[in-house]
Image 1 (cartoon, rainbow, N blue to C red):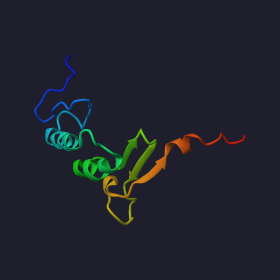
Image 2: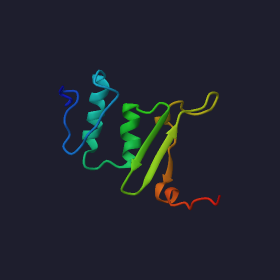
Image 3: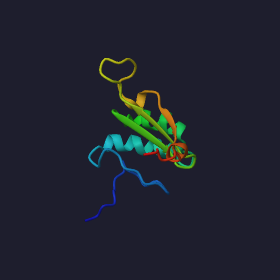
Amino acid sequence: MNMLPQGDWHPRIDGAVYWSMGWQHQSWDSVFSRQLSKYHGNITAENTIRDIVSIIQSGDTHCAVYDLNQNYMYVAHARKDGGSGPPRAFDRPFIRLNMKKLFGESKPNE
């Protein structure tokens, strides 16, 4: 079985591995590859939130972006029923979490 994707809608991007909603979503995958190629070599958490996930519209319920160099996680969640603001996570404000501080918390006393 050949697991390497081959298709003009899923071009290879040097030094990158990416996976979309699935091989059968060619139109979605082509937008994803276009946005990744546009920022290739300069992908940051900020432009991922602003110009990649918001354009490809990925993360309806939960959207997370990880900056492994700075140890930050950016996360947004969908609007609750009856809430205000945009309904989908990728359109909502992201919260920045300092993962070094979170994982550096002392163990609680038992």
